[in-house]
Image (cartoon, rainbow, N blue to C red; front, side):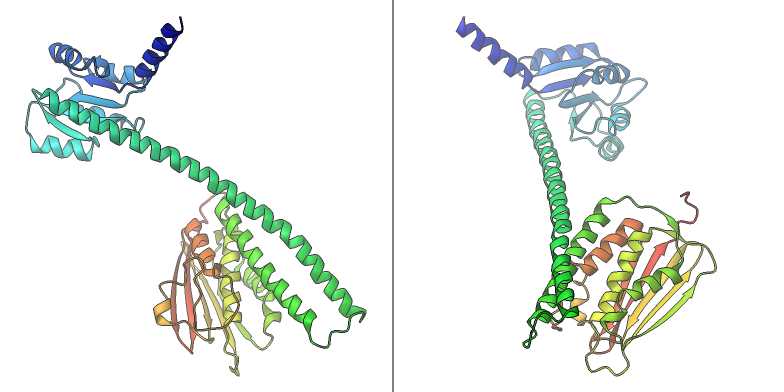
Length: 378
């Protein structure tokens, strides 16, 4: 009894794990010959037309599809071309008694075939081709499963980082509040300036946490288009950074003769990061620190320039500044190294572009182009 159960289990496993092949050919003797040759090695299904093959594929999950090229109504290439989007996984093998080069090119370009075999086929060559095709099929399937698994892990990790970052801000803000209270009532004597040092460190950490939250929101939130008033948006952004260096003169020039629709969140993220850098990377000995912001809105796009006369960027670093965690070694300013990476990612989300020009010791200019989605419904 136990032996019978083991045998049945083994047969079931072998059946479930056999290579399943659909062979389509309008010549019945070819279908019979194929079955006779390979039925012991594989699980074979046959169809005498492309239409019958499509019907079978609705109920059978096959690994390999073999089709004859010269069939009435629909050729093998036409059949493969029709199913390539709905059934991308099965490997495709084309059989033909002709050696037409155009057929071969069509088969590769349109039908996405794995192999092209001449009729009458050589049994050993065809079996070798089937086994090699199945190896590729299983490798691709395993790769897809790994990608799905990695995407799930990545999503969970992102959620964890976002949640943790959010939770970290609360105690940090509490500490800053306590520091401010101690200053108001003069309850703490701090001749060495330790409280200022603590406050600076907390602000740096909070800035980094905010960048992480920005990155997460940019990667997860859907793009939403709404009307944007660039005068209002830029002034809001500037007000967030003016206090960091009150000697900087901001020059704003907005030319907006037409309505502009865009993603307010991502455009704010872009402006905030670029303005923050323009303020942060000023020269300490500059007598007239300046940041220029200009916007020109046209029916199809908005072009923005953010120009500063700060320390600039070394020419050899310009190709790397949008990479995550890249920080130029030509300055001692604190930074997370992800601000410009977030800028680039946000622009990718909304179809924008960015160019940078910089001269070390003279300043930096960013040019941004963002499509105007004014024809989109909100």
